[in-house]
Length: 371
Image (cartoon, rainbow, N blue to C red):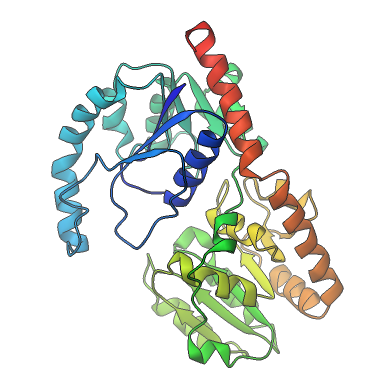
């Protein structure tokens, strides 16, 4: 079975490579069609080919952000049209992302079956982006979604027929736990001896960092580390940090894979106070490291809590979040129980072997006698 996984802009390299490796171990002939990732090394596994077909000029080293955006705009349509010839080599095409969905649905190769994995944070029904997403998903033969909550929303709000939907979990990023070139924490962070709360990943408005900072104003005896590249103005967040009784440290840059383990292993709690999400790569990183989690009750997050791997709080409720943080910081056995459940979930429900088996079953259903 010849499968192409397609992520033109390399939006999710950890997921792409983990799935490609797992599918190859299950016997598929896999090609990952993507572009060069501009922010550091990617987690290559064995058994599949990588074709950096897209955005070859804009992905070169030394191209700044503004010029990269301009070049990508110029490269996108020609690259999508050239991809039509590449797609002819596959039995099945599985899209991870399509960067310009309103346009890309018209540029898709005729090759079928087509599968799409729903990585998007689902928009509100009736919005323009929701209508665009509805049109894109209508062009697919199957849609993979990572949670039962997401499946219900895709049916109710985006008109995806149940027969097209398959719920297959997101995998835990366990490759991060076995890197040979792990980097230590920066020297100033290694000096911290007390409890540490970590908010990890790109800083964006929907992630509720301001809610966490408001909650942290009511927490004493701990530090808060906000770790990740900003994708929003930071002045308001820094002002909130100055009002907290405990120290807030911003590590405001892209964190490479070799640096992640030290941050995760140091975290007494990993907190994702999101306003809106379906699933999160940060969540599946924390699960892989068996970290105690505090999550907003949004999207598919409650399905993690059902396994005992997280405590839930209402979104945009700093008071309740502060209460839960104080409670868990004072209760080491409760944190240990969350950590144990997280590690168990990572090794079972969210193991890539299981995910590859379920994905291969979907491929076989779609290909039928052709396989």
